[in-house]
Image (tube, rainbow, N blue to C red; front, top):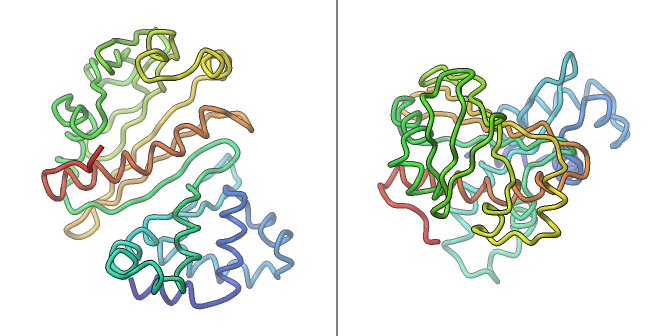
Amino acid sequence: MDEVFKALADASRRRLLDSLNARNGQSLRELCAGLDMARQSVSKHLAVLEAAELVTTTWRGRQKLHHLNAAPINAIADRWINQYDRERARALADLKTALERQPVSDTGFVYKTYIKTTPQLLWQALTDPAFTRRYWGVAFETDWRAGSTMIWEEQGGETTDPGQLVLEAEPYRKLSYTWHTFTPQWAKAVGVSEEVLADIAEEPRSKVTFEIEPVGDMVKLTVVHDGFEPGSTVLGMISEGWPALLSSLKTLLETGETLPA
């Protein structure tokens, strides 16, 4: 947590975070141009922010993109803001604002969190219906082999489609699959209107990837949900859902209980 406070203490680094908060997934060149800062200065500041896990990176071809990661700020909020009266925590209001804006870009969502568990248990929590039903309300019927189809069970109904596939499955390391099909039955079960269903059904199918990395007695979980077009309605929907879902997953693995609905 000391590294996070140190990173936030510099005004230039806060400007970088503000820029990513406004438009995530920027390249180094875009950040330099948008903030009128020298490339070398931006690179140094980004290195500090990455070390504090406030910024994460992904690659699009040969281009490195930078994303705001809210997980360390969540930790600050849990330790400090929630222990004091909101009036006394006004000095940290900028952290609250950052928490309310999820780490999204125009075409994808990136989120990192640390969970006190093992890679084996985290893998089980991502694949075992007994786990996924508890924190997600969803169960998957598949053999978790690359190329296998998936049946999504949610709200008492099933969603099937040849396009629902396991893309990669390296136990305890990496899991990737395509997102489910948006059917009228699914929309009715989860309360999505016909108008919204018509919009999202026209969008290309997205994919989600979970990367699992042991770090001491914890595990770093990176979630990348991408494959969206700019302005995607689905991206907006999953960007609101993933942070709460991952918080519930973390709580379940660390305490045995899920977050209140």
